[in-house]
Length: 143
Image 1 (cartoon, helix red, strand yellow):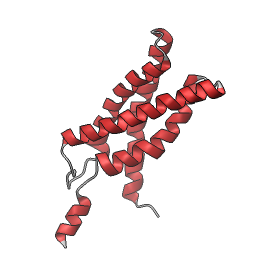
Image 2 (image 1 turned 180 degrees about the horizontal axis):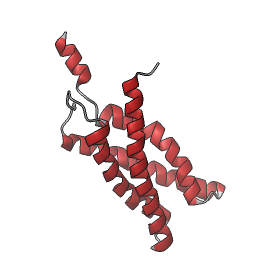
Image 3 (image 1 turned 180 degrees about the vertical axis):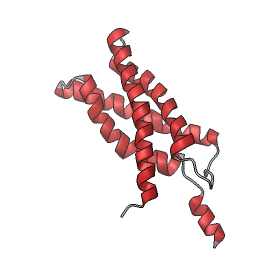
Image 4 (image 1 turned 90 degrees about the vertical axis):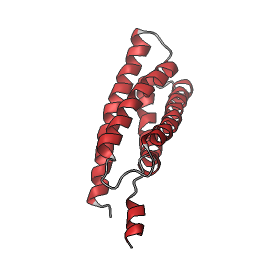
């Protein structure tokens, strides 16, 4: 059903997301609990730091390929920034909704929202839009 390569890429992307995510989540807790920022602002700051880590790992390890990328790094950074902006917005708003509507602690709500945003929003956009490769183009050119 799924190729070995696509499974490995997915697992590598999860490692990148985990490393960026653990940084993001830990920094959010630090900023909220120690520095007393509202969690929505903490998510904005921590999400940005986590995104830098995630982008770097994705660019240089997960989606690195021999056939090249379909766009240069500046374009990838711009696209990634748009994905991150959407991701942070969804996480911040979703966490706030769970906290206000259902009185779920922001730390738990954030984990719930993260799982939906990571698999349903971030991964598909990062894989198919930000780091799209030239492999399909190369196959067409070789025919």
